Image (cartoon, rainbow, N blue to C red):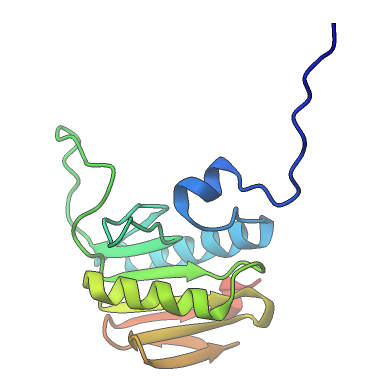
Length: 163
């Protein structure tokens, strides 16, 4: 009896990539994501709620930023929470993977602003920098300094994010 062997396709997408529409994160991505979430939680836990990997009900098919910042409201654990968040977060944070182009990141920024976010951050791990978009085409770039999101009065030490 011969065993059927499925061919290995080199560039096949994983379930994660298909479900979220973005590349699977690597260790660097995971560390940066955890560092940003940790620093924001420490400094702004009374003002904001930080969440990771929450799918937003954006058009046309939904999107899942790496992190979002929401107003700090109590959670109601007695209610069922839908799988997709229909309310726009204040901020979306995307960490660019090596396989993603900057054009792909800009497309996401536009989608997030159309959804109603106030600010969108695009993190560039290789150059240890962050673009803070105030509109889809207005941004400030921060590198090795204190990031300042003036819309939300958030400051973030990028040396801690990338250590």
